[in-house]
Image (cartoon, rainbow, N blue to C red):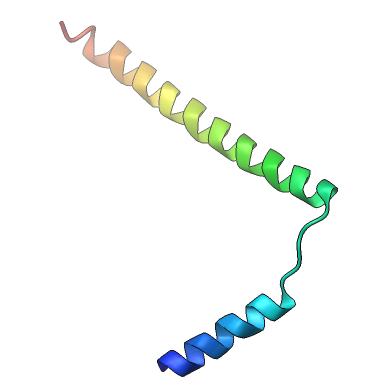
Length: 58
C-alpha cells in the first residue's frame, strides 16, 4: 500500500464521517466509562489477591 493509497483511504473515511448526536455520544461515553471502571476493578482485585498471598511486604 502506497502513501497515496493511504491518503485516499483516509479521505474516504473523512467524507463518510459525521458528528454524533447527543444520544450516540452519551452511549459511547457510558461504554467507555464502564470499560475503564471494569479494568480498574479487575486491577484492584488482582492487587488485593497479590497482597493477601504475599503478605504486607513490610
